[in-house]
Image (cartoon, rainbow, N blue to C red):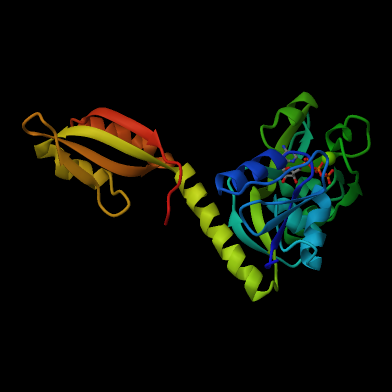
Length: 286
Ligand code: ATP
Ligand code: MG
C-alpha cells in the first residue's frame, strides 16, 4: 500500500457540507459508512478523519492529520503552528464586538474596564492588547449573545455572519476583531511523499476555486467595436473572436471574474454587444 495523505474535516457543523462538496468537486470519492469517524477515498491517496471543529488544529499540529479544512478563526484562536495553504471561500464570518443597542458607543476606549463574554478569549486578548485596552474577559462556550441580557457581561465578542443573532438579542456590532473563512491548513513538516500528494490536491482545489470565481462569457458584436470590447474583456490570454454568418458581426468569447461582472456588462452594452451569454465554468486549470 502506498503513502496516503490524511485530512481532517468537521464531524458535524457549519463547515462539513461545503468541505465534503469541495473534495467531491476535486474528483475525490469518499466511501462513507454511517457514523464512521474515518473513511478512505477510493480514487485518490486520501484518508478522511471526521473530528470536532475545536480539536482539529491540535490534531494537525500533532501530525495525526496532515491537513485539514478549518475556519481561519479557529487556527488563530488555538494558536497552533499550522500553515494556511489556501483560503476556500466558504464559511465566511467575522469575529466582532457587540454591545446592547441602547449603549452610546464612543469608540474603542469605551471597552476599558468592561466585562466581555466570549468563546474566543485568545483572539479577543490579542485585539485588546493591540489596542491597549484592559478588560475583564469572561469565557463561556456557547450562547454568548445572551450574556449582556442576563447581566453576565457588558458586551460580547462573537462570530457574526448575517448579524441576525445579534439583532434578535438586542445587540449591535461595534468593532471587527478579525475576518475569517474556511481554509486548507497543513502540518508544518510533512514528508516529501505526502507533499507530492498534497500538491496534486492543491492543484485540483485551485482549479475548482478559480472556476467558481469566473464565468465564461459569449457575445455578438459589430466588427468595428471589437477592439473596444476586447479592452474591457481581457480573458485568460486574449479573447476568442469568431466571424458570424451575418456580415460585419463577430462572436467574442472570454472569461470574466464574478466580481467585475455587472460593471463589465454595462461597458459591453455601451459598445453595442448583443446576445450576451454567461456560462458557469466547471473547472479552470491554471
Ligand atoms: P465544536 O464542534 O467544537 O462545538 P462549533 O460548535 O464551534 O465547534 P460550528 O458551529 O459547526 O462548530 O462551526 C463553527 C465555525 O463555523 C466557526 O469556527 C467559523 O469558522 C464558522 N462560522 C461561520 N459563520 C459563523 C457564525 N455566524 N457563527 C459561528 N461560526 C461561524
Ligand atoms: Mg458545536
